[in-house]
Image (cartoon, rainbow over all chains, first blue to last red; front, side):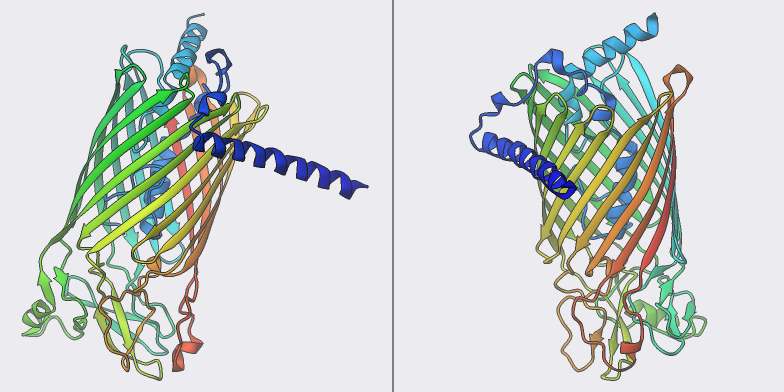
Amino acid sequence: MENLFTTVIISRVKRTLLNSFSCVVISLLASGCANLGVDPWERDLLAKKEMALTSSPIDAALDDHIYFSKEASSGGKSFGGGGCGCN
Amino acid sequence: MESSKNMKNSNIKAALTLATTALLGATNTAVAQDEESWAFDSAFLFYSEADRVSAGEAIFNANKTFSDEEILNLKLTIDALTGASANGAVAQPNVQTFTRPSGKGQYQINADETPLDDTFHDTRVQLNAQWTQPVADNLTASVGGHISKEYDYLSLGINGNMAYDFNRKNSTLSFGLSYFNDTFLPEGGIPNSFASMLIGDNELNGWDDAFKQTRLINEDDKTTTDVLLGFTQVINRRMIMQFNYSYSIVDGYLTDPFKVISIVDNNGATQDNVYENRPDERTKQSAYVQTKYHFDSAIVDLSYRYMWDDWKIKSHTIDSRFRFPLADNAYIEPHLRFYQQDAAQFYQPFLNESQPLPEYASADYRIGEMTAYTVGLKYGMTLDKGNELSFRLEYYNQTPTDAGFDEPGVLANIDLYENIQAVIGQVTYSF
């Protein structure tokens, strides 16, 4: 009985995520992003410092430097180029 | 009360200038705060690998928002590295001798140990400046410069960025360019590709001349040009997503002048160690997607990056952070990162003397096949006057893997793909 319950929950979550993802992709393809988004008075959560896409620029810069020196990939979120003789 | 009014102002300001946070390449631009105010961040990071490299890095960042939404960001970074780094040669069941990069001295490696060169130490100073301002309705521009200097390396860079908001600022399209010019003056000069590493007594007559024969020139340079396209979309009140594509061309001296590759015989015994050689061009591309979702109190940050280049390296990076608020304006943030990369086309752990010398070859495990993961925890708190203090502790594990190379003779009994483990600690104070 419990297994059936969790299976239903998991499949519901999966469906919601899949729906959101498909919606975004389809909207992007149809260039109709106007149906996604919020009105200015609904930005209470999004305006928080913690909700910024890069909420810790210092951590991001330090991590980027570590992974640029130790791995073969860099950038993606921001510019990956040059900088130091560490690679 | 004054402080709550300021907070309300900064929240509205933050909401209206949400686009600024989506600017790419300018991760230094913080969310806009009170007009005409300075915000400072100071951080110190310590990185330490078991038996290998240790590094300390300090950052001081100053950010000022002007009354017309112009933002100036200045950052000073100082780092120091010390310790031992793999020189690319393969381990052997006997003691081995290598020459230091400067040519002035030798070092010995015990049997069955991965050869590490511990002359590796350097101090670096870097300065970044970034200016961001609105240039029209819904259009924001940003320009910046970078200069980095260490004993043997100089890096100069500029970047420029435009961001356009639409759909009531729910969507942002961003386009950025950056250009870096790096000059390298390694100790001992740039070696001839595939020249044998000279072993002997550097005090004897004739050593200096013989060493010079293995050198090509004193310095060389490389340029890096990046193009970055980005799209940010607010999905709903709780969720925002970002999609980026980047294209990067690196041109110039891309070889590591300090690394060698061993030439072994059919019994796995090293016959010679020669300086490695990489192509003088590398074109990289990446696709990146990030989601931030605000639950009732927790926030999740999930991202995926796929990178591919013309060295045939492909990599996957999954990064995730979960922020949980605690009582008294504190928070805890677990961090989990997975990384996997394929080897570069010219990567080989060693060369076999029975095979012809390839055009390019490198035994640098950092362009070999590997998986890595990071597990970390960050704890942050808000102090009186709104200043923030945070601590971060992470564990980084790299597992180089065998990309399908034969291990002849004695090499079958040696660990050619040693695990690397590092501890990372950081303290940040923002005021």
